[in-house]
Length: 133
Image (cartoon, rainbow, N blue to C red; front, side):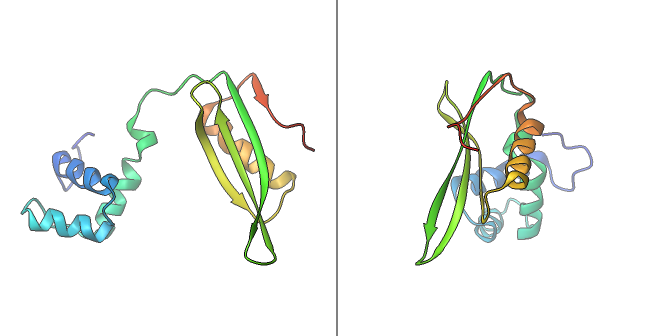
């Protein structure tokens, strides 16, 4: 984390992000930083730090993935509503790479989901599915 053009020193931003990723809410992070006499910032400033130093941006190395498994399933919500859960898994480490929900199952939703994967992880030679249409 570079401190160029930051109002707040990067060490304090690191403390704030650490507290947030430990599970504190934005407002509780503000209270903790203020209580410890570290720095006084608003919850919006903390939120901006999270957007700026998102975990995917912090890691500079892009993972090399050779295979993806993409699947979707329907989930019943309430008494009569249904939603679709879209998941992408990397089978070697059994890591969930992407997850989204939608109210519909069509080519537009599938294309948006897959294009997000391509923009994040690049094109891959092997994509496995369950053979659904």
